[in-house]
Image (tube, rainbow, N blue to C red; front, side):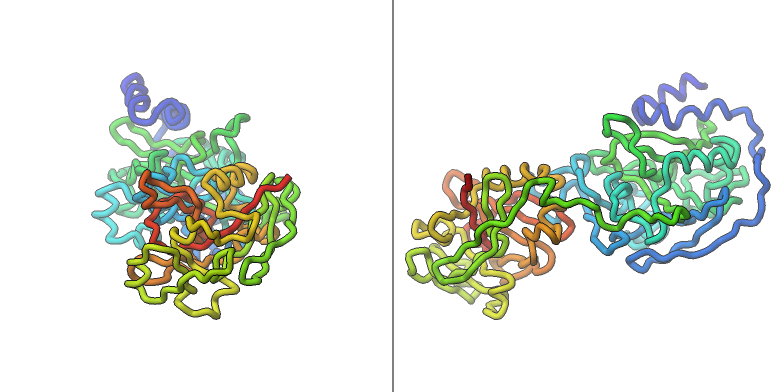
Length: 477
């Protein structure tokens, strides 16, 4: 039977999973209810996260644990955690340029969404979220802003192992923590479980390709620790129930940091709560410094930042004239904007009171116009300019955090964009910046960069008649 099990594990879960979940066989001869600790009545409490969600808590082995899976979409300090519903970085998930879930290097979460069983039992994502919580990557679980309620934290690997030792081993821990409520596990279980009050649910996990697995069969929770010295894996605790192999197992395992697992939090009794903001000075780390500023042809002034060998506007362009003083036509009507074949400009919601804060929206005809929208010596950045800048601040996976940092201030507002049909939209949800790099050979589409409040950065192409913001750039010595 053990050989059959090992073959099954290697086929379905791979070597890392084999090491972390298949050692249950050493316990297979133990009595089903041989609990090594007294089954005292659980001591429950309550805690609330920064989003307002409330959770039941339980005291185990002298520590207070959440008795429900975390479902917060914000850190303790209120910063949003990136929601990645399918395979990509943000709402442009259908586009080929987006990064898959398994390539993310920033904190992210998703609802479990890959099982007909999950859809059959629970009518909506809201129900799945309420019962099973969210699935997070390790970057969210280990982020210094603290994914847990303030005063709580993600457990260490040592604390997970301490829980197993408290109950007397893998199989005993399974019996103590597995929820005994009907419907939350795929298979019926004749063994008494759940007496500890931990309420472990089989919420499954998210794979590297963005798919989902083992709903009803497995639950897994991150620790805040890295699993190996090469920093490629994160440690997690896993509970399995596969009755054809008599697998009642609660084990510690390791896997890619970009898998999606649940999170349980533990009360921080150290008196030294994890900092809610990273003690990092990004300006010093990446040698970012203030530039000399700039003035456009309309007399508007702009703050600038020098990042590596490029100086960037840190406010959106708001000129209504080309660099030679000739006006850029303002098109308020949606049909006129959509039908334009030359440069055009508009205010957010056609309201000039927004201009100083949000800047103006330009179509790509204005970007490519030889008269120039940027001041003399400045240019609309190319895609290469953006790539060089993002590399200079740690690469695309971490650049969002740097550019959104209040001390850096590259994105002071999210101005949204102007689409072809419904006018200006997306304020507060994204900023879109034109590049001067065409996407297609006939120059009908141009690339732009999108930055979302959660730090997601994507490269997308769109028609010339779309309306995006502009940041000017120039070379510096």
